[in-house]
Length: 138
Image (cartoon, rainbow, N blue to C red; front, side, top):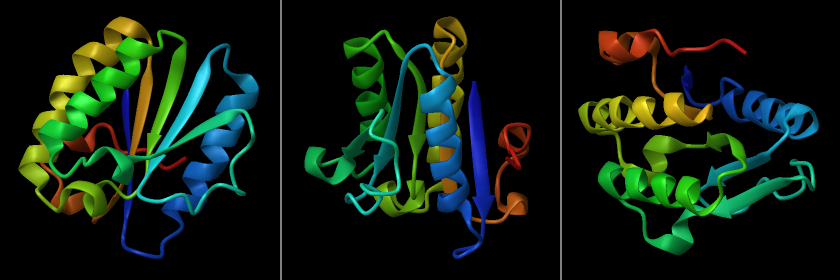
């Protein structure tokens, strides 16, 4: 399953994501991963959440991000939730490429019972229709 937390900068998306990740860490029977650019969330996340600094791996495009996510999933079958903060800061604001990556990930997440939540600084109207169904308000 894919989820999208969208809104303008400063609207509380990251705070919501941190709460969601911490809750998932306490209720999940598997591993919870948060991917962010940098490690600013170190002290906000539960010690049960694995924090990954995507900058260390040279991810700059959505194709590279797709490969990175697939590598995480392939390397650890116990992952139940992945939270991706500041998606457009990592790969740029290429909304069609983001949509294509999400469409590719839907098949994988559905087959493996995994949830990936992307945080994106944009308004819902900016997203293509095929992604609007994944917007969450949590």
